[in-house]
Image (tube, rainbow, N blue to C red; front, side):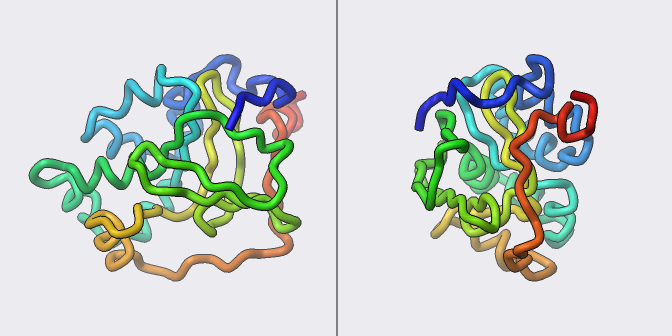
Length: 184
């Protein structure tokens, strides 16, 4: 992994990962879970960092109370879950061909793949990539669990709905947000 010097300009005008998640407005569950285990500062200042960011809809497909159950007691399962969604470093997405394996902050390996169908993380489609001042957000529509952990067992057993198959009609946008929204 390295910092890609040719990556498009910051679409959030210097916003951190935390600031971008707040601005997006549909990641409240992720932000709430991060607050439960004191990861907010990491999202605000740690650099460089890749965050695999499930939407509120993804968290909504979990059975009610899943996050509270993960946070119960010592909150280690919730920390495992969230740290599996974080990778230190910045991946050069412009030059990624095929797949690579990255180590999550949790320590479990995460496979990232780029092919003609788009960008995928742990086999799930990345809907959008957003560059922030301290890393990248990979927006996904599923909560992922680190293999072989209590968090993965709880998340997979409490998911309501199947994973979405790859669609040849969906593409991942690698544009600055302003350009993607027609403002640039």
